[in-house]
Every structure is written in structure tokens, then in C-alpha cells.
Amino acid sequence: MISITLNDFIGFISGTERSKPGKVKKLMTRGEYSPEKDYWKKIRDGFKKFHKSGAFDSWDLNKLLLNVNQKKLDNYTAAVDGYKDFLNTNMPLWFEPTSNNWVRGELSISVNPEIGLVINHEPHLVKFYFKKQKIEIDKLMVIFELMNESLSPPFGTKISVLKVRTSKLFTMGFADLKYKGLLYEEVDSFVRIWKTLKAKEVPQNKN
Image (cartoon, rainbow, N blue to C red; front, side, top):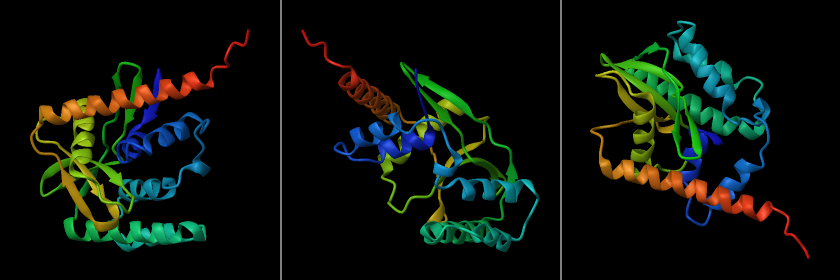
């Protein structure tokens, strides 16, 4: 079984057809998970800790920028500023989100929205998106479909992705079989690429 995270899968589907083999290769060779190699870990954990602690002043999030590696400072600052704007605009209430593993064939994806937020009396399971690049609508709908299938949210609970830098919350509408098909195509493509790369690693028998 091939096991990856939702973040890994988002990175894969966000790539071009030419870049996808390189993204899969990187996942194959990265080794065991290491917090030091998790670029956004401090920010993700900091946002969650902020909510769990019952804090309400978004300026407290500025503490996440203390003692940050200079190479990360610009990206971290953009994320903190964007999240502060989102909180100040929406005034959400936090709840513990659900998570689950989604399996199709030989691929298992750990689907783990970072936070649950009640916005305007509606609960949302929210996945953070930290990258600069725009999310294409088809890719966004594939993410929604995967989260919806995996988490099976209770009636009335929304599936959402927050583009943190711009404070923009994208929320899933009605399910569409078109995007279920696209999800399966992306999963099957990932597995095919993985198997192809694995086959190249097998030493050739020289007679």
C-alpha cells in the first residue's frame, strides 16, 4: 500500500503533467517524516494552538514569527497576516475536526483538515492552502471531492479550503460526478507513475 497525506496529493495534482513524475519521485525518496523538514508545521500547529487555547486576539499570532529562520520569514509573515485578516473578518468559533484515511486501490491518503470553524452559524472542515499559486477550479473541486468522500461530514457541515495568504475561503457546493471521476483519474495517475518509477529501481538481471 502506498501511503501519502492530503498535502502530498494536493502538491501532486497542482503540478503539470511534466512535473508530476518529479513530485512522485520526491515522495518516494523523502524517508521517514521529520518535523524539521515540514516547512509549514510551526504555522499549522500555531494556528491550531491559538484556537485550542481559547485565544481571541489575532495579534497573538504574531508570536509565531519570533525566532523564525530568515529563509521562511517572508512566507510565514504572509500566512500570519492573511490568517489574521480572515479571523478579524469572520470571527469564527473553533471545533475539533474529524480526519480519516481514504483508500482507492493501492493508494491510501490521510485526509486531515487542520481546523473546524463555525462561520455564520455554519460548521466548516477547513484545509489550509499556503502556496502562492492560484488553485485551479478543477483541482479545487478534486480536493473537495476527496475530503467529502473521506470525511462524510454530518448534514450541514461544509467542506472548505482556506487560501491563507489571501484570506479567501473556498467552500464546496453540491457534489458532481464529473469531479469524482477526475479524482479517480488523478489517483490512478499517481499510482501508475509510482509503479513506473519503482520498476526502474529494480536491478536488471544480466546474463
